[in-house]
Length: 236
Image (cartoon, rainbow, N blue to C red; front, side, top):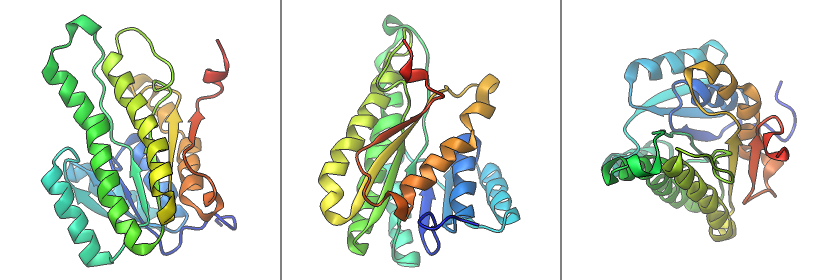
């Protein structure tokens, strides 16, 4: 039973990278709260498994296969969403990639690839989603950032810069889109996605934070970055 104020009944959500890991947990959490979820990814097999997982818990979802870095494909997908559903209520920018290496080991091509995936693609998705949300008079955008936005470590310069940019974009869009009834918030997981800690990254508490931001309970909350990090940022 979804608590009052947290129901997403009748809402349409798009989750990028929604077929596995944290994205899958977010997909299932949104569906459990009543949302119809468009599950984005590049691999049809993982998307179909995600849709089956949602169906198994009584939720509703469909796959949306595309590479979010392909601007033409994104534009086409949003045109189809407008034509088929008429609105999009929730966007979760979850896709991210990492390339750990020393600062002087980077050439510009991998730098551009990381920035394109971790920042430019999210910017484009926010823009396309906001156009639809403005037509409907409301919307929720939630960016999955990282505690690597406000803090840093050696050997991770580009990822940290991209996530820091996404965090700043979250605040900027909250200021710019608030007049249209759109809230923009971020969730910053405290662990980095590796095989050894994948179970922690996919913690349901992170998905729960996303549901909160997507729900009517957070209608007066915008421009915030919620770190779900077990208190990591509180220590030094």
